[in-house]
Length: 340
Image (cartoon, rainbow, N blue to C red; front, side, top):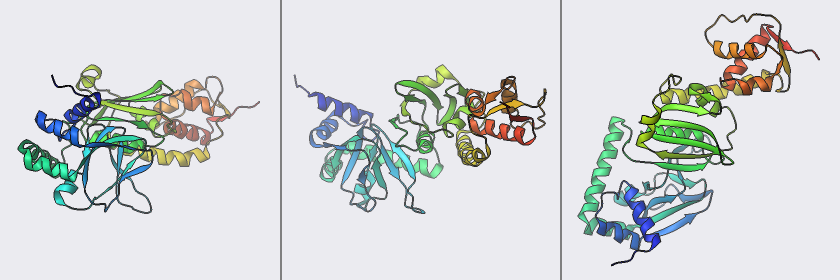
């Protein structure tokens, strides 16, 4: 019986997870694992620079790589994150063109490298490989032309939000039509969960906040947390949809980013978090439906004086809505700093 080393078994499992290789015959899989090599990339290193020759294909074994857009106004914005089993670089070899994007490693990553000679050998000597590649590229083109997200491939992303842009991570999961769970942990303790169903945020929980308010709050505090997304067809069946998610996912994302920017302005007008506040009247005067939930929560909490920080942390609403309510009530003199 032929023996197989542990490392080779891991590489075989990896290629079975990769869309490009998942349907390849056993002979192709073994050829790749025997002739490809592995590279370990340290945090902050560049895997690909725009304009580099396209001389290899990469398959992510562990960690995450970040695909960056062109430089605009001195900044490069992340376009996507690729995790275990995802491939990059095959088009550059096929078209014999330079690399079209920069690819960075925010944290340490390990990648399988398939060089040009091996790739071209696979194309020439394994008809199944070429056929599968044609099918995958045709599907990518169809999705691009029809603006249909790629919902069939499973994705796993893992990293620290000290290095990754939260908005782009979520947009990557939305754009690729994923179903599964993204969990946030800090020092081993779960702090939040986002459940995705076919690229939509079906449920959200961050601390004691849920729904839209949980998603908003994710963008309004400094997240020193680790994230892990794992595809799972069972998640949506177990969890179901959340009525407190009231808008489409991309609209919710845009709204969250807008509120984040506006909160930075409002915070400059807010008293210090240690400031003790109290009511000046027995009844709340709030005529508009907008912001009413946050205003009523603040008012109920202020049955006894409370600090600004306590009001922010205790509300089921995100900081933006609480701050907006507090500022309005202070401006209309329904609240005032408590006397010592």
